Image 1 (spheres, helix red, strand yellow):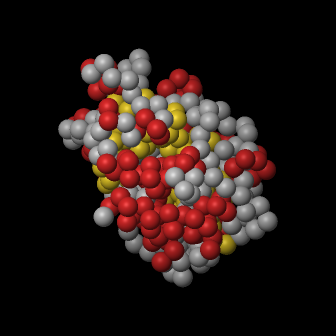
Image 2: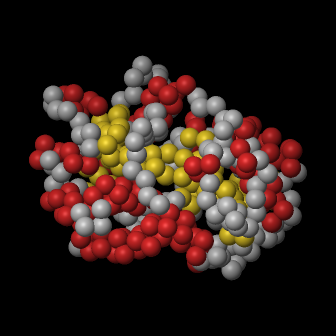
Length: 345
């Protein structure tokens, strides 16, 4: 979700393997897991894991839908609550109730009658800010959606395209949840007038345009505000050498939208048994506790412990915007169409 990290297992662009001893995971670009954790699954299950990364989450879901009759793999990971209905309505997944799924916290469970998807992780999509930029100018960073349209923050924000990027879509849904069906368009017109920049995906926004990230500093990014995740600040600490005592970036807590990511067994998976074993593993305690410092997301199971870096540098938002999945399913596509005509034209 929020890390530029290498996949474990092999990664290539070929078709899903017909080899019954290989299980292929299709995911967005931010998939990551520790090598020893993947090795433990391979030893325990007898399956070799192959990972195919397929772009930003929005792009990956769209491609999976287009290739559902001849899928690239067995399991898809990374469809979130903003795009879930698109995947389910298009018959992307076949039912399977993962072993151990009773440990998943009730608030993250969906589709409980058919079990077409399994919750794997959660996080908050929020505006991040470059602490140094604001300190150097003796300017308070924004704290809320309302703040972002103020003249003090003109030409400072970069966000992702809501039609192709899950954080971009999550940010749009956050504004719709905040301002309602009658108010979000007016809000975005103000944001546009205040110089918001839109790029295709999270990698470009965070690692190229944002001045506060390690990647953005190298790329000479000049936007001190970016739509990313509440868990991005811990990533800036964990991957820094030497590690700083405080995170160089902060989170505008009044801009957060709660995201949940799911995995599912693809409808025409060539290795369905391997896919089921992999889904069982994804909700297991070992993988759930491995996720936070690899993909910078929170586990969804009751028994998984969160590393101390998360509590210190990237706590979950106390009061994030949320939206009923049925509302997202009904309104997402019209909202994205309106957003595109308002903001990109």
